[in-house]
Image (cartoon, rainbow, N blue to C red; front, side, top):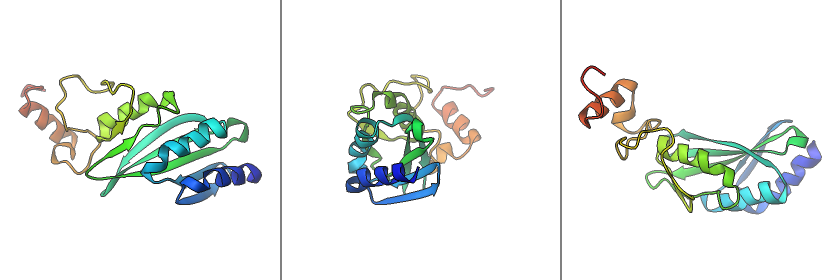
Length: 165
């Protein structure tokens, strides 16, 4: 296993800012936003790792995106950690390299407000077509999304819920 982790570390070295082995099955790699497509290409194309999923987390100064890749034969999960700074929240999509990332990038866009450049089609997946623009349910820095009650109140103001809803 250590040999493969060393291979990953060497392959990603040109595009990373830090590399942390949490345990024998988890590796976290920090990648600057401008290098995320290169890092995804290395993991997916060069090292043959399967794209598992991505997760997004709202932090005070950025949205953190973790792209999780699994070299299955190694029983390992490699997470590419990218901080997308606020307020811009724009990053290149990895879909030109990993088409399977389209769905989860769309979810991250809807829920957290990250815009993915070169995304093949950011259609709505989770929120209705009449959902208010700029209202991202998982963002903590928006007064309208601080609680379920705040979201309901915003939807009432926008005419999407009645007083009874």
